[in-house]
Structure formats: structure tokens, C-alpha cells
Image (cartoon, rainbow, N blue to C red; front, side):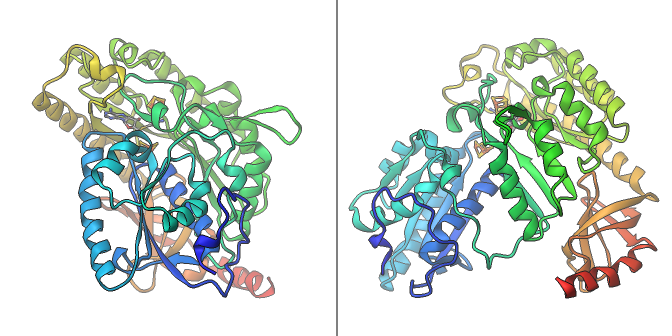
Length: 484
Ligand code: SAH
Ligand code: SF4
Ligand code: F3S
């Protein structure tokens, strides 16, 4: 049976185990962009697994290559075309050897620039937006038959989540996992393409999320990060038929066996409700580390950005969160040089950063995105000025991050062991604050939370030694495994 035997419009989830009679095919996925793209790439591999697709070593070895793209900042489209040029050469080399290659472009650039992709790169076989990847098997079948490209960039009425099969049973699961609970955005910040590429806010039913979390935990995931473009705007229908907010969902997830740690990202300050703040106080599995983008510390710029809150609203919100969870550490996103940003506005952003104190943050130079309101706004900041503001901001953030990491030295922290470290005999893990840690230890500790003494803060990680009690955990854990 070849893939082209797949019925058109057949979106029935195929069996999780591949038909052994099906020829083995190789799939290579290149992922750019946010965590949701990482999650989506995994799901694309899952829907293709029943067709016999297994991971390739690289594009040259792949019968199908998916480029999962991001549109958030400048030159996104050009970057895609330059990568496609490289993939075209590989496709032609393979064709000369008698091997065919399906080339697919997915993600937010595909959504925004589908027509341009097919016009400029006619050797692309499939263009699919983030809402249509459950239709990939059918699109692959059509690509085999069709002379031209197969394009799917509409926002279908059906929810892709209803059609996604579980990951193949053989697939090894990592200790940490992403789980999309909400997608899309209705906020329309002046500068941002996401509402156009991901569509309107939509939340998955709580039962579907809980079921996916149960499966992840059964395969060994111990830390689950709930994903959404506006994850704290989550409002899904609960198993009781009522509307569940994110806090309610987190409480139910925390009750699942095996789910030891929960995180969520990315949040909007306006959607941080009382119940979610309370969850930080009373759900121990909810980690004391929150990514809460503020973008700017100037009210004038926050207004121009259509963020619909002030810098003081943000400060008060952080006060309430810290009152609920005194050991909470924070991360954020900042944009330097939004149209209209004066040096006084920028100084207000620097002041906000000093007032709050971040454990880390992501910062970007404002990048004009066609079709967004900011792209047409007056007061564009000169490139050199944006560069110098960004450098100044990043230096402050770096200093705060180093300070935060230095203050970890000497502390004993519960570390979730994620697997083997880089050097033999070493293991890696993460602290509640998402700091990467490495230490000497037995890789059989993967999936366990162990007490660890932080010894040293390095540029991007901490080095540590296992705490005393950890040695007692090993035999117990092994026993548990043996009897499982
Ligand atoms: N939904 C999230 C983040 C979406 S994009 C939120 O609301 O916070 C991730 C980050 O990219 C944003 O927080 C913003 O800081 C940055 N970003 C988005 N559009 C940008 C643009 N046009 N120029 C520069 N940075 C941008
Ligand atoms: Fe973009 Fe704003 Fe929506 Fe975040 S909240 S995805 S920055 S429009
Ligand atoms: Fe990029 Fe789309 Fe994510 S534009 S940041 S991949 S939502």
C-alpha cells in the first residue's frame, strides 16, 4: 500500500502503531519560533507516523521535510526562502538518485505568506497553516497525485485537536513536555502578527487536556508546561459542563498521578485573575517561576501598543503574585524602540526592570510587521537608537540574571532530573526556576526530583552536587521500576 491510497478528506485518526507492511519513510522537521511550534512539530510527526514516517538523520536522508516557520520578526519570509533554496538543492540531488522528496512549509509564515511561497518556490509540495496539520496525511496523498502544490491555510471549523492521534507507543517520552491548551489571540497588540497567523482565541476542553496529560505522564513526563499564545485566557468547557479557567485546570492536573511539576506560558497581565494568583499560593506543583511579558515600562508606549494596562498595574500585579508566592521569580518580554518610544519612555522601561528584578527575560528590537497597526504608526525609532537601547536593556537583564543565579549558590534545591548530562557520569536537570543544572549522578534518576546543593553559577547553567538524601532514592526508584 502506498500513501496515495489514503482517502481524500479522511481525517479519521489512523492507528497509533504503524502498519508493519507499510514502507518505512523518513521525516525531517525543522522548527523555528515559539514553544507552540515545537509542540506542533511533534504533533505533525505523530500524524505522519501511521503512514510509516520515522525520524530522519537530516534532510538528505528524508522522504519528507517539513519547515515549521515563525513570522514574529523581520526577515522571517526571507529566512524561509533562503532555507527553501538549500532544501531545493537537496531535493534535486535526491531526485537525480531516483528518490522523491515531499517538501512542506508549515507554521506562521505559511499561514501569512502561503501564496508567495507557492509563487516563488514552486518546488514546495505542501503549504499548511498552524490550524490544518491534522489534514497532513490527506495532503501527503494529494501531493503524490497533484502536479501543483497542495495548500491548506484556512481556519477550519473543526478543531485539529479532535483529529490528532496519540504519539506512537514506541516513541520515547521526555521527562518534560509541552501541552497546548489554548491557541490564538484576540489582543491585537499594535506590533504583533500572532492574531493574524494563529487566529482567534480558542481553548481545548479540559477533559481533552487532562487525557493528554495522563498519557504524557504514563510515558514518563513529570513536568508539563501548558502552552497558549494567551494561556491564562484559557476558558475551556470542564468535564462538569462548566467553564473552567486556567487555575481550575491546573488544580485538576496537579491531582494526576505522575504530574510533579506544572508551568504555563505565555500569559498576558490582563488575564491574571484572582483564582490563578491563588493557585500560585496553594498548588505546590505549580512552579514558582512565571513568564509574564510586559513589553514596556512607559504608559504612553503601553497605550500605543494596545496592551490595555499601565506600568503600575503590572507592578501591583507582581506585588499580589509575590504576596501569594514569596519565592516567585519572574521572566518577561521587552521590546526596545516601538514607534513613538522616546528616551524618557525607554528610561521608564529600565526603571520598571530595576523595580521588579527579573530572573531572566527576552528582549527584542522592534521589528515592523506588514499589516500590523504599528507598522503604519508615526515616530519610527532609528535603527542605531533601537540597537543601543536594546544593548542597554540586555546588559541590565543580564546583570539581574547573573545576580539571581549567584544567589542560588549554596542553596539546596529540588531538581527534576531530565537525563544524562554532557559528560559521562553526569546528569542534567532543572530547578523550580528553570535553571539548567548539571551534576555527577546516576542516569537512572531521570524523572525523579532530587535535593541538590548548588555549587557554582556558570554562564548558562548551574553546577551542583546531589544532596545526601538523593542516594537513598536510587534503590527505591530501581525497585519501583523492576516491579512495574
Ligand atoms: N503571546 C505572547 C508572546 C507572543 S510573541 C505575549 O503576549 O506576550 C513573543 C514576543 O515577541 C512578544 O512578547 C514580544 O516581546 C516579541 N514581539 C512580537 N512582535 C514583535 C515585533 N514586531 N517586534 C519585536 N518584538 C516582537
Ligand atoms: Fe501578540 Fe499581544 Fe497577542 Fe501576545 S497578546 S500574541 S504580543 S497580540
Ligand atoms: Fe512565531 Fe507563530 Fe509562534 S509567529 S512566535 S511561531 S505563534
